Length: 214
Image (cartoon, rainbow, N blue to C red; front, side):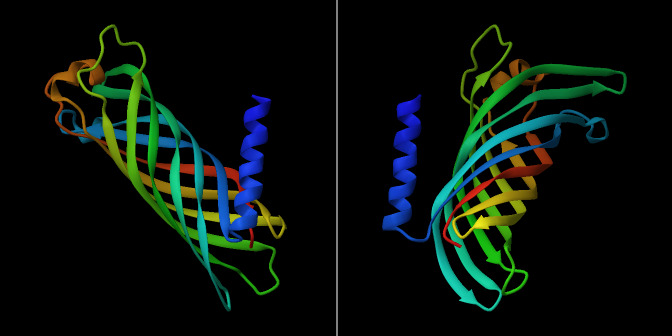
């Protein structure tokens, strides 16, 4: 474990030296998700808790035109977990199982400074990719196919700099997912047959760290 940390640290320092606009964000996100499908009345939706570990790695194209600092293009990947839960009727909530997903995609961030001498940067961003769900807990049988969920995220971040290469990050974001799954796995995933569509929308709070030249 110690050797892995040393290797990661060396890589970060090396990339920051060779590529001066190299950026790395380590983010922890948590929030509420609303889940619904074509099978169940939308008025009986279910809310559940979602958590996410997010690593973003890429390059900043600096602009430095007045308050506009530049644009960052980053690889967006990490892990996320949440239960799959449905309200079958007004008086019967049926929680099926939990899942652990791995997601990968791209993120685009637009960076602004509130003032010329500010120690903060404001970031508006969008990310898109796909989440793979290889682990579904509490199932006695395996799924026929691994569910895949294309996603879109919109987010706002506030970076508070300790120095020119390190910042503490707080933020807020919205996201949407559409799960693609084998229809024959409907009962295993949701506890009911003939579910054809599965949607998730939610909001998440972000805490983390940003590494990279300002």
